[in-house]
Length: 503
Image (cartoon, rainbow, N blue to C red):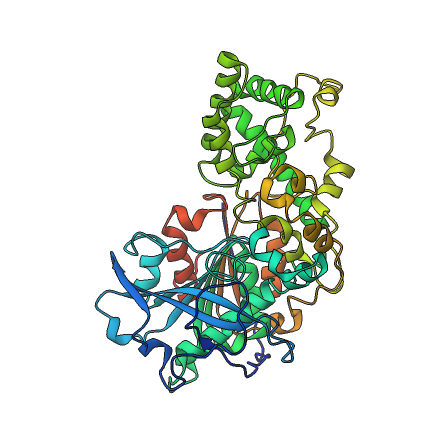
């Protein structure tokens, strides 16, 4: 199924770039840097620095750059800074064209995930972007990777729970976008035309949310935008998201058990065991039945059914032969869950939907308890009391719950901060619907019909709000389509060029 929505008529673009400054960093990484940090020389362009670490990978030369950005872009009196890391990749043979080649900035999914170093840029979306004439900028969004990473270890230096929560409140899409805007100014400084100072944007999942915020705040800085599986719902709170995505989780569970019907009994055996035993993971976390159900997040990705089946088969085999789960199985299960290594994915997850003074208050948990508790039941005695006690036990998807702050070792240390953030009502506006309705930036977006993470119906409404947005809806891919097939970025570039007109 493919649907191409023709762009809405466009009107004059609004929004302006506000003056600001960014300094290339020459200090060691930490979560916050004082404002006394100075660049090596204010006269040396960032692209001309000779102290930058660089090396080659197949197809490109990588430059590893750090930038000092304000923690709070809105409050000039706040002198705190964060250090933001970006991998700058120039196509081989074009190293002397850094000052003229246009940039495409890649914004990763999440929230809370860094960009990985590609082993090569000769394939995938990297090669597509290079063939379109771009040099690449892969930004670790603040709070991730090498960009002031958030963890229990780094947050403790900020003092009280209230102080830690206040600090983390500056790690949403609006701050990420303002970081990117300052970096854009540093990298494009000296270019002679307004057009040459603009950057293209590519956003996967949450990266698409960031792009929509970028379009709201700094549309004049963007040459074009491509969004993959991340056209955000323009909501003020997350509740509607989970009312839409829980039914999709149900459908994916039904499809999983249709493919692996013997896993019905296996999963029931595992859930019964986890209800009866206290299972401690190698990192000190607890493998509870409810945590085991979270493996279903993989159902939203191509190949996810197979990866979960492998874990189920392994765990069930352990229970059959030894009566307990092996260290190997426990390690694999823990490795399949990224909330400890990327804690922002939990503690800031629902805040990405909050605007205009609305708190998240654990929306996924509230919606589940109100409307889907029996469907996703994890307590064995209640499972046996259901109308069909032999029915499959369903996995959950991309949703976070307050009990995770007890089950995950790293999240335990962040429990008070997470609880505080869930009740916070000071979230500002992320999107300007007036600016989006007047958009003149070319935008192409793919939404996946069966997406378990970002509901296609909610995305379609937003795409219709963004003037000039070409939306491609397809059931050929799941949420990770960008990483699975080069057809996705190639098709989006063709949409932007007007090369596809028969849909």
